[in-house]
Image (cartoon, rainbow, N blue to C red; front, top):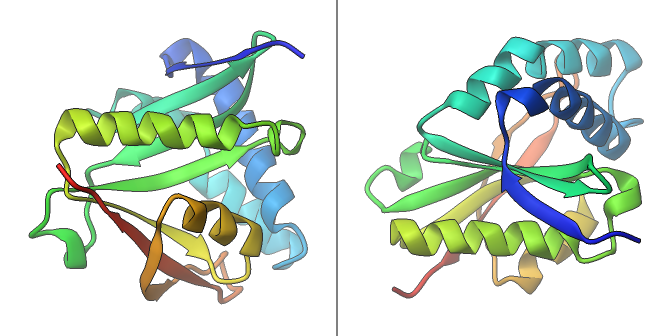
Length: 173
């Protein structure tokens, strides 16, 4: 097994990252909605142009986890804040996804540490994220870092209703 590295995504990563976005989301949520809803959501949410725009967005960081010269996961950390966080110095973990073969090998921890590094540089008070209410594995992962539930919001996959929990971690500066 080769060591993983984490680095900022570049436009040269866009096509591979787009495929990782789609595959990791599909593998995580397949069976929770209709096939049509899944395919429609993937094509609308992860088109190549959007991935390139996210890589170049000055209001976020998009880091890729590279293992054996292939992207195995990524984390998107953003400043696009929800209403409850507008008055706070906050960052959102907009996405933290790994391909299934990269789960359980410390890669999620490494991506989370990158988030904490950025939070320290930015001197934020709180980090928050949304996680599907039935993704117990992810909830357990986030709770190990001290994230706690502070609300919920609808997160439909097209016509399939779903709910995300809002989790946050207060930071000490």
